[in-house]
Image (cartoon, rainbow, N blue to C red; front, side):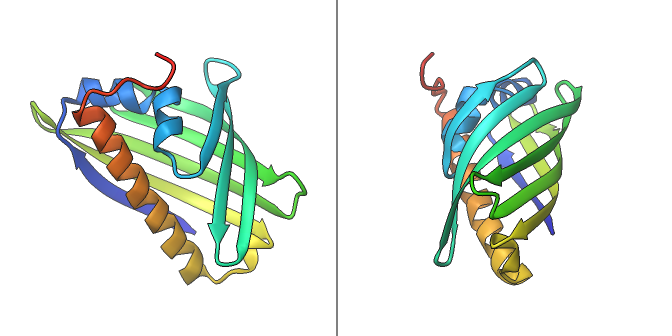
Length: 155
């Protein structure tokens, strides 16, 4: 399943880069994210709860940054499963920041996602709608934190 989108943030690219590569801030913005822990300079563990229809799942994920080109692009891989292994998710992700003008940055993202197990049984349409809704929630939370200058929790 391909998930992609583009949004603009009223902030310079360097400021957006600092925020979008801050794990604590990302934990606040990702819908259902319960925790993010830095395992190494390029690996993170995250716990994310997702509900699709009547099914609720909490995933233990590992995110690995495979390539970083500051302040333009980040490539990463996400892998994880529910505690009971009822569902497994994997994704190849690309995030790119483009300067629109001195005070506006365009953020584009693309993920090739595979889901198997009980969540994978839902139709592609249902999964894409859920992903789009989660993407919209992330965009609003991220924009608010960048444009309002909020620091991540624990800072």
